[in-house]
Image 1 (cartoon, one colour):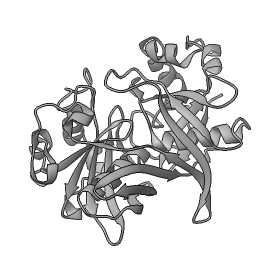
Image 2 (image 1 turned 45 degrees about the vertical axis):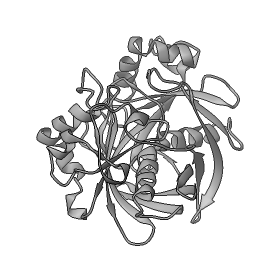
Image 3 (image 1 turned 90 degrees about the vertical axis):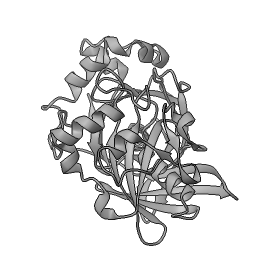
Image 4 (image 1 turned 180 degrees about the vertical axis):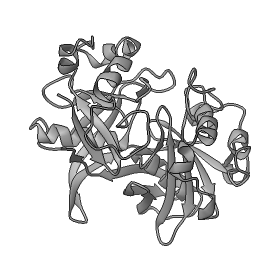
Length: 325
C-alpha cells in the first residue's frame, strides 16, 4: 500500500514498484528503465495513489491531495534507487523533503539502519541521472531526522539552461517574464542544487507572493508558464522548466521564502528550494556560511553552508518527516 508522510507541509506518498504492478500499473523493475518509460505509467500512478480519496487529511487547495509519489526502492538493500513523480506525471531530479520522507520510510520499514545513498532517476536531458544524495540520521534541536548532502551549488543562467537572460550587478540576472508580473521581482539568482531554481531576491517582505494568491488562476497561470516545461508551460527562460522562489531578508542568519514548484505549483515548503534560497542569499551577502534558517509557510528548514573565501563549497539540508495516519 501507499504510505503518506509529511515533511514541513510537503506530503508525498511512498509506494513500491511491486505494489503499483499489483494495481495494474506497469512499472519496470529497474529504476532507469522506469524513468525512461515514465510516460507509460506515471500519470496512472498519480491518478491511482494521489487522487482525492487517497489521503484522509487534505489541507491544500490543489488538484491532488499530496505533492507527488516517491516510487521505490527498486532493491532490498542500500543504496536505494527511487523516482520522484510530480502530480503532473513528470519526474523531478531531486526533492529535499521528498528524500527526507523516503529516508524515514526506509527507516520505518527496517531497510535503512544507518546513513546511505539515495539515487533519484529521472528523464531530464540537461542533468545527469541518477542524482545521488548521501543521507545521514541526525538530531537537531531535539528533532530526529536526516542531513542530506546536496553537494556544491552551481550559479548563473548556464547552470539551469536559461536562455535570453541579461546579467546585472554582482552577476545576478534580470528575468523579464518575472519583472513583467511584479516590478519588485527584477533581480534573481539561478541556482542548480541537483535540480534548477530561480531565486528572486526582494528588499521588502511585502513583495513576497503568498500561497493563496499563487493558487488563484490569474497569477497561477502566469507562473506556471514560466516554471513548467512544455506542454503545461512555455519553457521560458528554461526549456526544462525551473522551480521559482522569492526570498526576503530577515534578522540574523535567516531568510523568508515562498515557493512555486515546477510540475506542482505553490507549496508550503521545499527542501531543495530552501537550499537554493540559502545559497542565493549567501551569494548576495545577506547571510554568512554556517547554519542558515529558511522560513517558509510549512516550517523552517535548517540549511548548512560551507564556504572558502568567495566560493560556496557545499550545501546540506536537515529534514524530518512523520507518517500520516
